[in-house]
Length: 544
Image 1 (cartoon, rainbow, N blue to C red):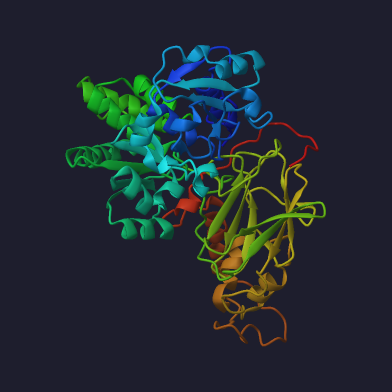
Image 2 (image 1 turned 45 degrees about the horizontal axis):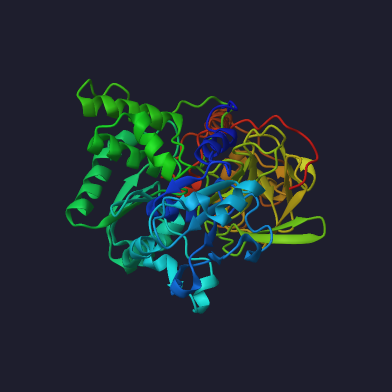
C-alpha cells in the first residue's frame, strides 16, 4: 500500500503546525489564560511545533512578585534576561494588570526590534487570573520550584470540561483529577495498557473504552455517541473529562471534534479548526474525516448511515498483515535493542514486552526513525510462537538490513542475540541483546530439524517450515512431537512424500502468503495499517 506525500504524512503535520504557529514577532497577539495554558504544553515530542516550551517574561515589579509562573524570567529590562533565551522561541509577556498598552512596554518593543522570537504573545488577563485558573503552574517567587519547568498536561479544548491528551496524560490521571477535576476518562485504543489500567484504578475515575485502531478502515463513528455521553455526564457533574489515544492526534481528536459538532451544531471543518487551534498536532486520518463528514449529516438530519468503512481489507498475496497469525507474547522478556551511532551508545529500546514492535516515521510506530530514507512503516520486530524473534521489512523504499545484508520485503528473517539491524540509509545501528536461546521445544521430525538448523541470524525462514517446527510438531515423515527424537531415527533414506502431503503443504504455503488467517485481536502496539507505506523517496547518507 503506497503512501502519497500529501496524505497523512509528516509534511502535512508540519504544514498544519506552522499554520497554527503563524504569529510573528512583528505583530504581538493577545492570548487569554487558557491559550497560555495550552502553549505551555506544546513542548512535547512527537510532532509538536519546534522551539520548545515558551519563554515567559514577567515584567511585574519585584514588590508584587510574591507568586510567579514556574520557569518564567523576571525582567525589568531585556538585558537582565538570559542571553538569547528567546531566540526561535514562543515568547509570552506577563504583567500584573490587564494593561491595554502592554504593547508599548520597553521589553515588548525590544523583542519586536530584535525580531528573533518565533512568536510574541501578550497575556491579556492579569497574572492573578492565571494563578486562580492554574495554581499548579505557579509557585512562590522565593521557592525552589519557581525556576523548575512544571508538569505537562493535556490540551484544554473546552475550559473546565474537555481535555485532549495522550498515553502519558492517561498515566497521570491521579494528578489530573487533583489539578483539573478530571473525573472521567475516554480511551480510544485497541488495547488497554497496564499503565492506563493502573492510572484509572488509582484515580478512581469513570472510564469509557472505545476499541478502535488508527486506520482508515476503522469505523470510529460507532463510538461518537458513547464519547458524547461521557462528556455530557462530566458536564452535568460539574467536572472534566480526559479524551485520549496513543498520541492525541487522530482517534481521540476525532471524538472531541464529533462532540463539538453535536453540542455546538458546528460543521466538521469548524470543529476541527477549533480543536487544532488548541492542539496543533491534531490530524484525523482520511477515513475518520469521512466519518466526521457523515456524522455532520446525521446531526443535521440531512441523512445518516451512508458512509460505513469496511471492517476488513482484502489482502493481495504480496501484502503483509500486522500482526501475523504466528505472532505470540515474547519469551525473551529482557530483550533489548542497543542503539548506537558509530562508537557512541545512544539508548536502549526494550523489545521484550509486546509481541510486535513497528519502526518508521509515522506517529503510530512504536519506535521513531527520523531519517529521511525511512518509510512511514519501515519494519517490524515480531516474536514467534516458537520463542524466536523475527525481523520483517514492511516493503520499505530503502530496505531493512540484518548484519549488513538486505532482507526481502514481507518475509520473516530470524535474528539472534548480537544481530545488528539498520534501516534505510540511517547510520544508526540496533544491536539485539538478551534474546539468546529459543522457546517452544525442539523440532522432532527431520523437516523440523532442518527448519531449526537453517534459522541462523539473517536467514529467511519459510512460514510453513517454522509452523512445523513449533513445539516439535510431527509431520508426514513419521516424526513425533515433544521436543526430541522422532523423525526417521537419524538413519536410512528419506521417505517419499505422498500426494496428500504435498497438497497440504501447498495449502499451508498459500495460507502463509496471504497471512490473513489470524483471529488474534490487534494490540495497541500492533496498530499499524494492513500494509506498509512507501518512504519519502529521499536517499542519501544523512545523519540520524
